[in-house]
Amino acid sequence: MYVILVYDVDVARVNKINKYLKRYLIWIQNSVFEGEINNTLYERMLEGIKKIISENDSIVIYEFQGKTNFERTIIGKEKSEISNVI
Image 1: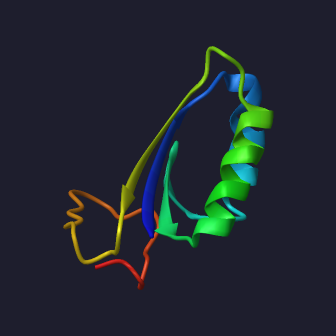
Image 2: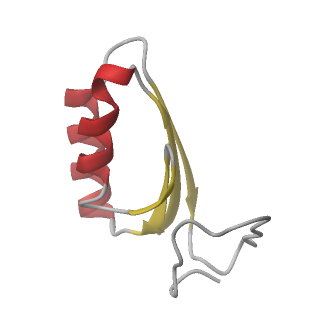
């Protein structure tokens, strides 16, 4: 599956969640990750996220069955070039 993950966490946990998510997805820009991930790694990633965040933090994940069902448009400078995105 292809996912886009957006997070809003307390500043005390930003570096920790950012470093953790880089193990699974591609860092696009501040608080945004995306990439292809299989179900096993996706579940593992979710479990790890739950261990890092607190009740006041927020994670939003958009799931797509493949990367052909959406369009990505960039306005301005692309912060992380991804060759495997549409």
